[in-house]
Amino acid sequence: MGDDSRPRLSTRKLVGGDGAPEVHCFDEQNAVPIDLARWQRLAHAVLLDKGVRGQAELTLIFLGESDMAELNEEHMGKTGATDVLAFPLDTVETAAMFVEYAPSRGPDRPPLDLSDVPLLLGDVVICPAVAERNAPEHAGTLDDELALLVVHGVLHVLGDDHATDTERQAMRASELRLLSAHHWNGPPPAAFRQEQTE
Image (tube, rainbow, N blue to C red; front, top):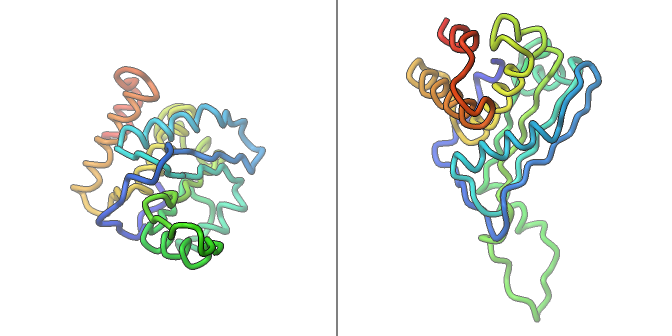
């Protein structure tokens, strides 16, 4: 998957202020029909499974190849469209920025409580056209490929990585567990298991 050099987040805050985690989904492409509600539910289930609580926000975006190629070159320095990119936000920096640009509360209002600031987790960007091409040689079906990319991207936003063999094995195990729990509702298909071990 195309997001190997993500910045490392050694400590990732998983609890926001009062509220519940939200996933905002956008389909900005027309090459492959996308069921936004379905992928929103999967991303939300992964957040809850990984311990995200309180007011937290994740954005899931489906882009066309040309837009994805631009992002890949701009942020990763690589040519061409990739299947998934993850852009985690640094919660310390975003909270500080929120305080700096927050409207004045006035003299009769209490100071801003940082625990009430939404936890901005980041963005997961997926290119369905690339996923469709990769599916036969990777996850087996387009449905399983898209599910894998959603889970993979969310894990990256939450701080997981696959830069070393140990990290790669841990991330694959986590992906398999999450897909089994929230995508297949049971063990993975044999074709998926075989592709993931090769």
